[in-house]
View (cartoon, rainbow, N blue to C red):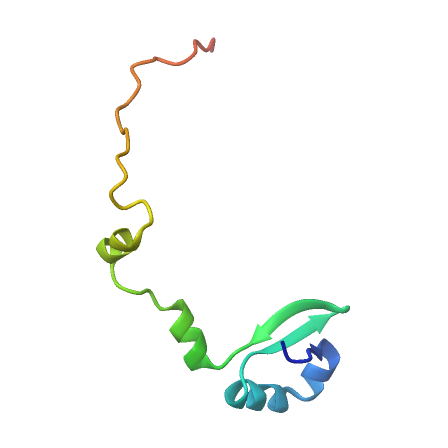
Length: 83
């Protein structure tokens, strides 16, 4: 990981933070010495947040594909509740 920007420095040099995010990759910003946010290029954000295929493709990629599930509903009426 690249050295992080302290929040005050990131605010003062926001253009530099954006330029580095576009040219060298994600820029970490800390608040009170702890990771707070990451500034990333819009293209990278779209790439990692865009869904890959539809619901059917999601289920095809599932590690549970082919596993038999017991989806029968229990006939147990549950517990008696006094109202």
